[in-house]
Length: 335
Image 1: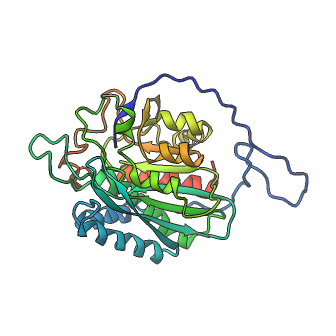
Image 2 (image 1 turned 90 degrees about the vertical axis):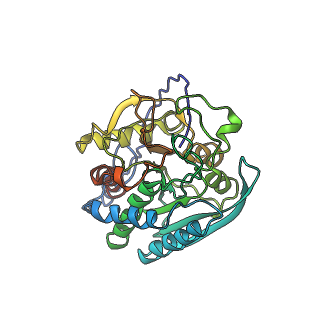
């Protein structure tokens, strides 16, 4: 996605939510998040499998709302989640785009171990950009969105495949949001957007947050994946994530660095980036962190961003493996 809001913030949040347990027969508690320390072995994330899921999505063509390609990909995603043992539901709705056209959207939801009260949310957007507004040759055509859209979904599909096989001892919900990338055309990536421009993005997550399909839904935290498949990707600590979910940000980046992924998960804070997590945080009150490729040194999401070069040629299995491993470790071992 999108345009960074450049703002300065100082956030000091004490992270101490452990809870004492006096009964000797209870398992030990992780002092960082109050969850029981798990003895489950984290499954190995398969980057080849995840890459195939990128191919599968791109093969449909651009996944733009109100197109047959979009509808066909939706069927594929629902079937995959069902194949992996999730209870699935599709939240259908109509939203108005900045073009004043009505978009038929589908937010695709897969729930693993639905009966559990303790839950975490994993999400990504599955649509692709309707125009290549940064492409110097064909700025009006839709893009394949191999990185911007398909990569995040592919990582979550591979995670879902493992959730079916290995019980993480917690409930997990996977949501694929629609119409995230149907926002106002951008002149430059670094320019600050007006608030009405911001709200033209992330239409599916805005719809979901304003029309909750699951009553009283309050997972402990959430992770949003966006553009997590390119070579040499870097994931800074994003501003809205720091503002609304700072303890979760620090725990995730610490986990990633302890796994040896410090060159990807960098200790650099950047301004707020308008993405699906912004609206989930602000409307639903669920602390959601955005893992998103953004290079602070270049103030850019990559030279391929919102161009026709966002295709399979830029996808790096190693980047997806890193992000997948971090997420799997959090799911199976806790923050």
